[in-house]
Image (cartoon, rainbow, N blue to C red; front, side, top):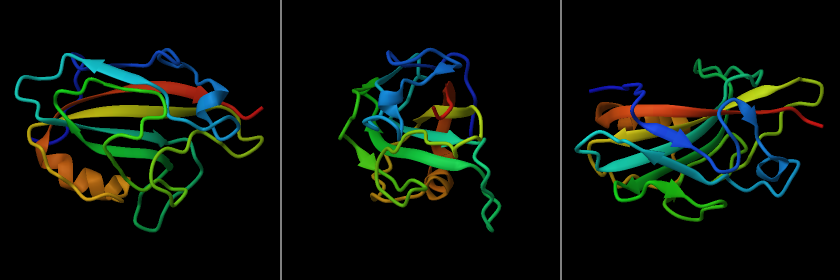
Amino acid sequence: MGFAFSNELNLSSSAFSHDAAIPSKHTGEGTDVSPALSWSNAPAGTQAYAVICHDPDAPLISKNGTYGFVHWVLYNIPASVTSLTEATPDFTQGKNNFGKLGYNGPMPPEGHGQHKYYFWVIALDSELDLPAGLTLWELLEKIEPHATAMNRLIGTYQRG
């Protein structure tokens, strides 16, 4: 089916509002823990979810044509789950662009100004049981045929 942006699938956080500042607690300048997230109104037939955080403002372009900086790749989230706790240790962690598994929050280069951080939730029509350690681009390749809806929550951050 391919990627399908959805206004019905809602994503929110108790830590910050859409297009508002991400608290330093969730950044590389703070305790660097993932924010709590919750979602609702997934399409009928949803069997699993994936969550990612990507900074398209990061001044990085890779030789394979990817851009920005990946902060979090999380997947194998069952359909019965509609929220993630702060600093969640649950589900399957992929590899971020720091070269680590799990979440590492915003930390734009000094003097680079404000960046936007896109937290995405993607609804899938099947449970895929994917291995740990996938990069964002590997994950997207595997889930693309199963994505039925997606939506984002945008947070901002500028180094102090």
